[in-house]
Image 1 (cartoon, rainbow, N blue to C red):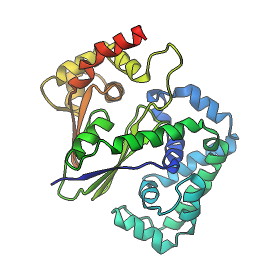
Image 2: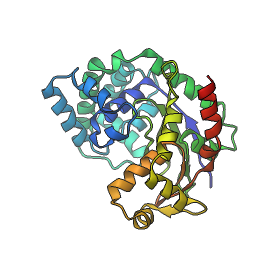
Image 3: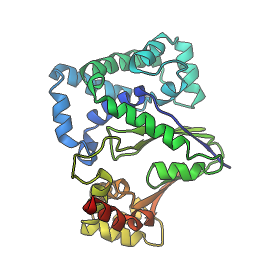
Length: 301
C-alpha cells in the first residue's frame, strides 16, 4: 500500500491559515510570530468584528476549506476562490464534501456563506496587506519541493517537508497534499480523511534581519536549552513512545509535555510516527547531526 504526495499552493490557503493562526489562542505561545503579531493584527479590527470572527470559528468547528481550495478549478486568489465558492450550489457543496468523506452538516450552505463573509473581512483588514514576498516565497517553496518527488519517494518527501512527521500508508489512503505555510510557523497542521490527507507545513520564506540567526537555528538551540526536553530526547533514543508513555516517564502534566513536544517537533528533533489510530515519537538524529555546521556557518557569516 502506497500513497502519492502532491505539493500544492495557492494564496487562498495562506489566507485561511493566517486567520486560523490568529484566532487559535492556544497556539499563540508556540508560534514564531507570537503575541506581538497577534496584538498588531487585533488593532486592525473593531472589537465587535473580532468577537464575530471568534464565534464564526467555533461555529465552523471541523469544517475544513482545504478540500474546496484544492478542488477549485480556476484562479485561487482570495477573490477568485471566493467567487467560485459562493457560486457553488448546495448539491455541488455536498458532492465535494462527500468525495473526501467529510461528515457533512445539514447547514453546509449556511456554513459556506458564513465562512466566505468572515474571510472577506479578514482579507480586507489584514491579508491583502501582507508582504508580497511571503506569497512569492511560498510559491517558490512549493515549486522547489515538487522537484524532489521522483515517483518513488513520496513518504520521504512528506517527512522532509514536515521536519519529521512520518505518515504511514493505510488500506484506504491514496493521496497526501502538502501545502507550505508561513503564518503558523513552526506548527504543522493536518486534516485527515479516508483517502486524502491535507498537511500544511512550516516555511521560513523571509530572510532574517542582517546578522541575526535563521529561525531554524533558533528553534534548534532553544529546544536543546531545556533540561526536560533533553530528558525527553534521551527517553526517545532507540525507541518509540506515545504521548501517555512520555507523560508517565517524565512525571509532568500533559499540557507541559505537549508544550515541550511542540518545541522538539519545531526543531525537527523528533520523528512523529503517524497512522490513523495512533501517534508515537522517536529521536530524529538528522537535526542534531547538522547543528555544528549550522552554528559554524552563522558565526562565520
